[in-house]
Image (cartoon, rainbow, N blue to C red):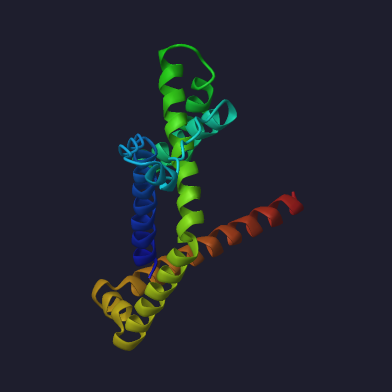
Length: 192
């Protein structure tokens, strides 16, 4: 069960990252020019294209930190590397050299992606829909496992439960051995 949860978490993380990149890419697309109008009536029906405001200051630094953290965790599978890259890019976004420019542009893209994600969620109500879909999929997977015993068959083939039982017994044995040695040492120190 843990292996399937881990696999699902990895796939979910990749999906979220992919959606973030898609949102960032869509945030960078220039709006299409308005079509040439023939009459005053046609002009009045066209709504002005909303322009996305450029992020400034703090949001760029936060975006750079978020991008650094995501990249670090995704590429190196280490939280500490993600934190290190987040700090480095956040600091870099405050500099005025080439690294600062790269950090600022990364932060700008991340901030635009975040804004676009919020906009899409507000417009299409994506979070509740995604939650409902994930709940449905996990319930269906649990029902399939319950009805067909998939995890039990995998456990029988791989003998995971037996390995866990052996490891637990070995840990208990080591714990009791160490505790006995500590008790003996304690008794010897009290008599001395």
